[in-house]
Image 1 (cartoon, rainbow, N blue to C red):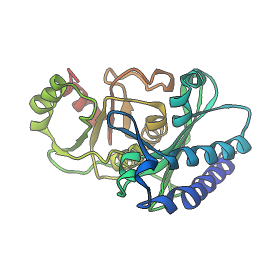
Image 2: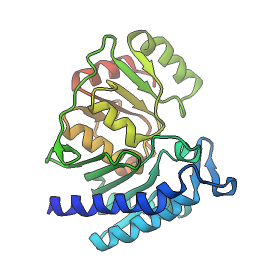
Image 3: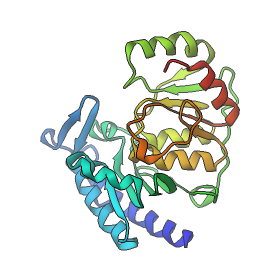
Image 4: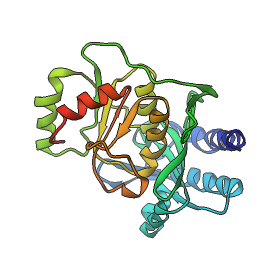
Length: 266
């Protein structure tokens, strides 16, 4: 069953990328880009891609609800489905990059039940990289099992998102984290950040905003790969607690523990 679903979802993601997303990359008009909120863009392509993904997922399993990022923005009542059985869809993760004509960006789909992510799929539109995981079934990269590995650097490499941090939280980063890590820029794309944590490019990353369409699939994939993604207090990430701030992902449990201890105050 998992192999069949993986194949169908991989094909759906690739099709939406080829037919809807890539033809508009670096080909958007000004009026096709809008701001939903500060630091949060949406394009006409997000809506078109989400509609096609929703149609495809309904064909795969129409018995469960679909929680799409753009649909939920238009109708927040849709978020109630996050506590039941649902598909979770981010039609273009990294919209800010896509809207500015640069990589990375991708498609993220998750399947959740009673607030817990059961399966996740992450597709890089430009490279075709396909990550997937099922709870208890391991993590896979382009169909092959993958195990998280650290960068091996000393100090470890940390990608810390400051987009939604307060001035006080940014001061905590500078005082308690910067001296112990090599800080690098975030890609503004969870579909890129989670693979970086497992593939030896970054050791640890922290997020303040933890929306389900951004994080559900990546958290599951990283944990199944042997890394660790969890709330700052160590509790498991739940898709129906997306207004709860704070999330850490790391390439190993040891690096997660070390970072969490130093990050008190974020």
